[in-house]
Length: 614
Image (cartoon, rainbow, N blue to C red; front, side, top):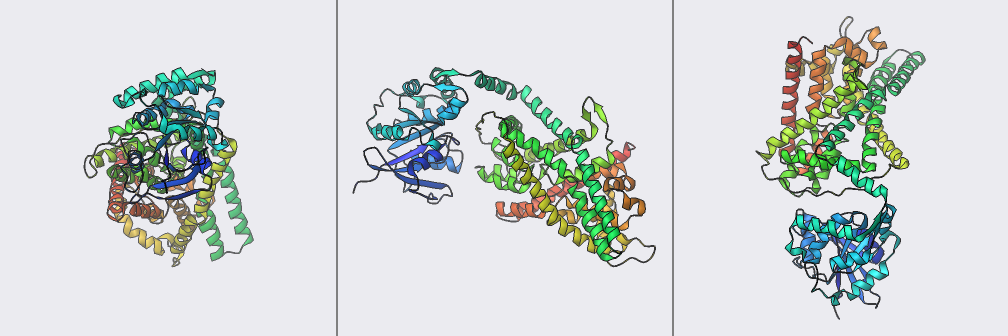
């Protein structure tokens, strides 16, 4: 029985290889891992026009045969016939994105230069035409020296022509091919640019406008200025746009508290609902509008195609501290939550690079910090402008996010020159097309973020607040004695406050830091519950921001903000870090250095503010 020929689909990530594989094989496919490697192996059966069966193998996306990750190493070994137990492919089907042709032809030239039977699938040609590009496949074929077949995998267009060329590929005349193997990477890039320039018959003004836009947004001088300008506007909007909605929610919670106090008799159940649930959990829920606005900006940047360009701009900065651009996406994910950010580091091939990224992910300002920042800024930073359209509160919030980024880069710089010493690996990034955000997808994304936030408020924050309320409410204080100081929680805080008092923290802050280890937002609900239990009538009627303004000094508030820039992550994040590093060593190092930075910088902030007379 003759061996079934093996045909490999190979190309850059996001070229549409999997869609083409699925279209050619249908349900006749199997998925497993390559022996000894946790990299997915997809293989399936198809038939040539003559009826001869073939085995298609969908190789992981790669940018070069010079492997920089486990995925790329598998692709390189299979293509070169060096993978144990895997037959060398008879034909290489190089899948390229027609709308991103210049980038994809760099790797295609390297594969063609191997001198093996090659067919190029010019995939997603419909999207290129939608973007205004008209590509001459014959000119492209002549320039590359191999057959080029336009395809639309998802619509099954061009599949018969592709199978026909695969069948004829072993008889190709390969003597006059362009010998890209002799070219350096910059020379292949220049050659790809020239090939594309000759193959494009026409392009619309919109496509040229996109190219010109990239010249501005990716410029090493104007690009960073535009990026930081957008971030500045985003943080201004978080306060300016959210304020009326926050006021509405606060008024609604106050009305609910008033209704409960009127409808229920005095007693422990009323105290539980008003002081524990409504004052505690409600003090966190009021910041939902700010979180929605923050994520609206992030989702618009992602859907428009700008976020990848922001990652490209940040790559240069990260190289200075010893990280590769591959670390940017996990760190970017950490702005939402450090848990998916740490899990996303699995895509980083270099183990030291990956460990460094895990260690600094908690310094990215996650959404859990936003309620903490917002309540302190609202209580102590005046809501006034410092320039045309520039609010002081938004400026302070922008500074806190920036401070966290700078702190992460400095820690990475130290780690990469000490315990995780090593050279940064290279990084190649695809630039997606510019497009208008789809309102339906945007609204779904916002709903998901709101649901996650409210679910945390209804589970983790609710449980932590209830436990804290119980610890604050018992045993009951004697007449004239402070309930907080007499409670179990108060006694616990007394011991912690000995350590925290030198950096300006008061008894209530020491108390709030304990449940905040469950989730950072709990610090806000803990403070609200504490002041609700032990406040006088004026404080009971005031919101949390007013209570803090009445009880805290400005140096204490600033120290509290500095603490949360560096404060260790929630317990769930520590658990994920333990799983991803296969032990407790590095999570414990993470906790220790974050606590040390938080304590030192909170102390520096407090004593500096006192010395300046603030």
